Image (tube, rainbow, N blue to C red; front, side, top):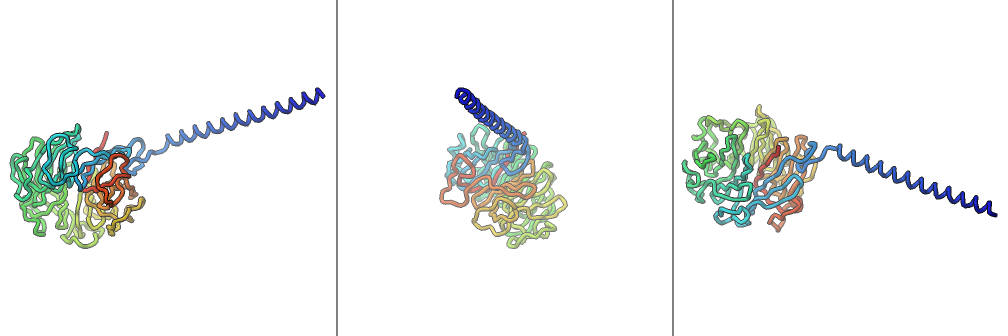
Length: 388
């Protein structure tokens, strides 16, 4: 009997040992799996906010001018904040803290110092510094009078679009048929337009100040050429020497864009941008984003032309229903669309679209700080702040 008890005890001890060894082996396997998973995850390409597949951290913040009186910022990690505007779109802007000032923003641009310039439909260009202070940079609040060269704050204007050139000058698309330039010191001059483009006149190649035009947005390339989104169905280029040429459009605004020679293509441009290679991106209010290459070839990069109030699907950009009000592009070639359906979308160079902000058309219109994809948003124009 004692021997049986000892044998039973020995057998029981072996069982315990087997259980312990099994547990140790299981824990070891778990640790290996966890380590492998962490290593694999750390070696993966991190997708950025804008839907690209660049390694490392996201590179841009996106600023949006909304039709209901706000400027919002979307950080690389997808968080939205309000940096300017109080939702009052009727009254004169108030110098001081930007978040308490009325404004009716149509477009925005950012200079190398991080100053935001707002084209305000009430007849002003406001400047917002990185510390959140607002000042009136141009305009006197009178929209019905032609612009007056000289001190920018004494001039009338109806600013629809705004851009910054390589010298820090502010370029303004004035709905009265002009392109104005305001120097950093605040002096305004007219660089294009004769004020007659609102009557559907075709632009005239040659001296830019003699040409009719109806500008709604403006962009500048790396050598200070100005590109104009003309509501009359054209895209014009103005060189630093003041010479205007037509780079796209045939004056027809109510037909589907036709890939091919850009100057033969119908256009209804609502926004414009230039990428790092000099390609022109056009937001067409017919429901498309178009690209025009340096050799004048036009292609469709996003939109199916339906423009319905629907949720654009993430995936192939040319299959999405869009109502584009503006377009911008970052240093990596990622395109950002201000979509009147209530979204901001990004499109990678491979044509993949992602929704990065907005919840679509809703009765709730005030942007909500927090996750950008959970906030109402009515974007009119965007600007990109690239980080080194």
